[in-house]
Image (cartoon, rainbow, N blue to C red; front, side, top):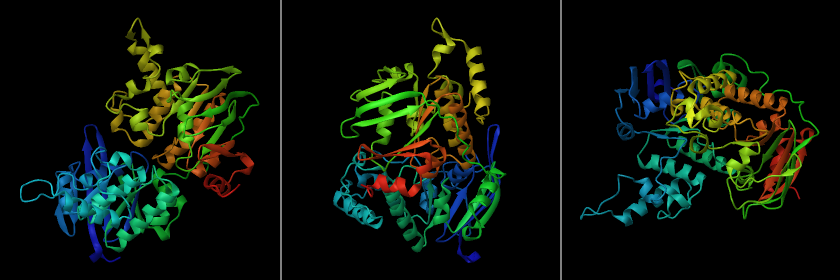
Length: 499
């Protein structure tokens, strides 16, 4: 890559929020038509840097050069007009408008009477959809399309803006393996067309599979840029964390003989049926399957999210009612949702309010909160889980993904569960936070808490589970002991390759 190929350059970028120096002298160089991975722990400054590039934040000091010209975007519109667009983890789509309307929102083609030219709009939308391999009718309502199709739609929207640089933030977080392959194919085509991709992901296999170069940030500072072909996983992790992580998965030897949970003939309409399994004291029972296998629905049914759930749920030899989350928690079952921002947290409320949200009975007397006791509980949880916050009054929405996930853990653990259901507990968190979460899980099982771990991250599933249950099309197709588990056999049963 020659200097003449450089499309974007950032020099000594600083961003200061009240009381926080989020970026401290960051450098970044992007070449035309390269896939450039941006790595760092949660809170390293990746999102802040990308929001500056996309015009969502202004810059405190430093310089940004686009195609050799100094720029400073005061809005996302300015950045888009200059050729920079960002695809966020949470899609920026309006669900009850059509695909075509979302593609050209606020840029609809008008006829001579000033009305929307629907024929041209749908025709242009069809052309863009074809470019990203989407076989959708442009008139389809976005609410009715899949998560993977939403991801491709966001890419199509970026192309409609004639983007030269597309920033992708954790684009595969909610995609299946087949959908990821399709996304990678689209990304490589964009590269061939000279479009530059800034790719943010905590999945190292993706980064090494896709990227040309990797830039590492740590604590808001620029650390290093490396050619992907010249580095390896251990080096990147060490640069991200500042130290080597040798034992990502702790040793496990805490499973007891006592059965704490038995599920018999569980049924949830078309989602799953005739599901039977047992959970032992201190065990981590892994559950997995391809998208639509019913695993997530099963985990949420056990937490009382569906009143049409049928089957027997037996705890400590006693049949229990799990028709509502209140019933489930009353019986000692808690859930960490796979969607922390919509189902696990109230982003516009404080760390303190989120941590005690499910255990107000501990801090309330005669209808009033004992704030002294509440603060003691919150401080203990912040210390116990090593949550990085400026204060307990900080808004949860301003925390990094890893710290948000720890807040969810803190809230759930304060309910003192006997059984903890974890749906994709490390989705969107960095390797350092993953190691801490795995250690928390191990310590919980040592105290006799049993865990149901639902995960599509197969190394995580294999590294942490004592047994693994594989589901396909709503039924359990295989139960594997720890010594039997490997990625090939899980995938074979999940995809239906074994009868």
